[in-house]
Length: 189
Image (cartoon, rainbow, N blue to C red; front, side):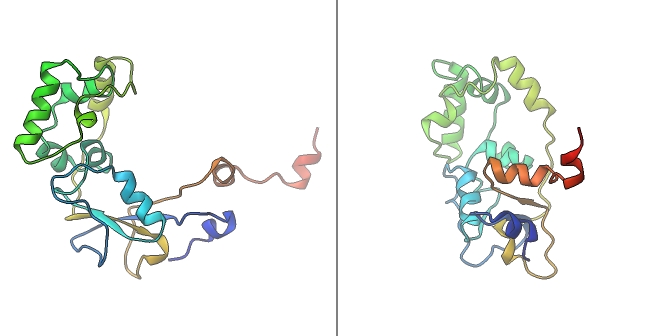
C-alpha cells in the first residue's frame, strides 16, 4: 500500500501501519520474552523498513503495552497502580512500594532496567494527578495475538491497518494539518 501523502511530503521515514494479527510476520523484530525494551525501537524498526511485533510476553515495557491497549499484558506484568503513579511523577527511589513492585516483576521472570521501576520520570507533578490520568485511559484487549508494526508499503491486499503513524518533522507536520493558502485568500486584506 503506497501513501500519496508520504510521497507528497517527501518523508524521510516510511509511514508505519499498525495491525493486529495471529501470525508473526517473517523476519519481524521482537523483544525476547520477559525482557525490557522500549516499544519505540519497534516503531523505529518499522519506519526504517523492517516489520516488528509484540505479544503479551514480549511487549517490552508496561507503558508500551498500555499505550497500544493491551490490558492483559499490563495486568500480566504485575503493574501496581500506585507504583506507576509515583514512577511517572515523584519516583519510586526510596519507596518501599517501588522496591516491592520491582521485586514482584523480577519474581515473574521480568528483568526490567532499574530506571524503569524506580527512577523519577517527572511527567506529571504528583502521584495523585498521575493516577487520575492513568485511570482515565481506555484499556482494551488486543483481539489477536500480535500487535504488528510494519512499513505501510508492505501492507498486503486484504490487510486493514488499525492506524497509520507518520513520523514527521515540524514542517511536514504543518503540511499534514494545514491547508495551503490559495492565491485568492492571500490577496484578501
